[in-house]
Image 1: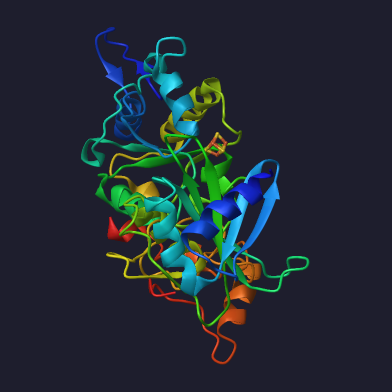
Image 2 (image 1 turned 180 degrees about the vertical axis):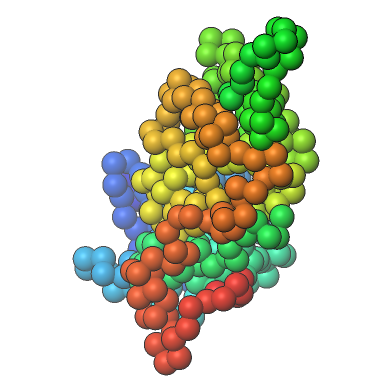
Length: 168
Length: 199
Ligand code: SF4
């Protein structure tokens, strides 16, 4: 029985859903859900499948990515600390609907991870307790890891007054 | 140092006031270590026992700018750090000098990205640049010696030499390609951003 088939069987018994898709790469299993089923799927995974640790939340900008039909992919990496199973859950998002429910109520580690994804990609996590920028200055208005943002920025890095001797 | 023996005996030395002040200043530089990245490790190595910067009279690293007269910027400076750097520079009393250590502090190095300042000399005056990634401690010692030479040659007791050095001597704040990208962002009414953190 392949890894996918195992997961499929397990999850279908708990909550049937036709829109789910699966993929496998080098013994790592990925589950693709639609954004409206995300919250229910994640709470099932945590409560019924024992995925008790959220390792990472990040996003991928698929602009100009070969064969991609959607713009953003939000990726959650889950771990079952007892059995060592891992599962990657991804959601595809398109502008202007860049919102997914926050996972903060399920895993507390989602707090800063989601803030970072918001900081870099502008994905909004609904019901996040404190969704503001994590790394960049709060006044920064762009999302620098999007592919349509120039790598050298748009002058933000040098937008500071110059210090002269007279001031000191 | 411009000295000459007094014909009346060995106990009196003639010199200029400037030269005496420079001699005193250059041999007790108190560095402010502004170490933000990997170059900072070399800075620590330079003042540790093997290389021993204190042989050249500048071992008193102080972590308060009020007591320092030499700022050593070692490492890359990012957008969020630059206001801190400027503030610390302003808090140091005159006369003060600055060493920009490493490729990152001098020019941004390999980090030509949206967050890294491409050379601190766009914003504060720099006296000695040290190339290298990271520079060896010997290079830092060389830079301190060069700075001592510079102080001895150009210093004045009242700091008159700073009157002609009012602003940073590096490249302009915005590069040409950066101006083009700013123009892309606001095509209708182009103007260079004056300081306005709302980008
Ligand atoms: S110049 Fe090299 S060693 Fe120094 S801060 Fe930059 S990357 Fe690090």
